[in-house]
Image (cartoon, rainbow, N blue to C red; front, side, top):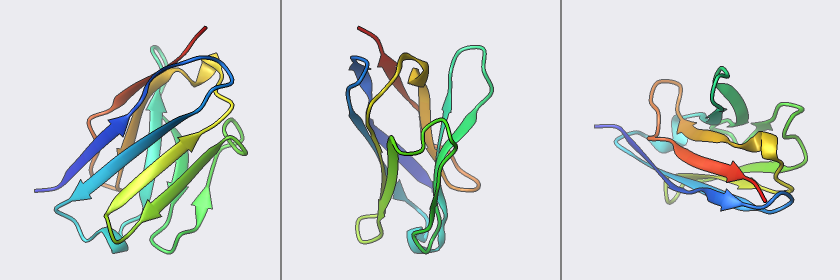
Length: 111
């Protein structure tokens, strides 16, 4: 059974930082690309970070330079470090493989 269990999130002030983590089980982690998405109320789900099985990363312009995705193949985890957070980063964040999703975690950026 594939499981993606997310940790982290919460409330942070504008300009602050948060780190999200996702622990995978039931998959061969090293052959999976890993992704982080977010979805704000009324918006479509948006890809915010991608890391390939080889460690190559991609980000949309909206988060480039502020978000960093990383993976630890030994622990089967993928993290999303978020810096200089803005109110428009407020959303539910999801880690994912190409076929499975984590449970989602709320990130709220507000003063």
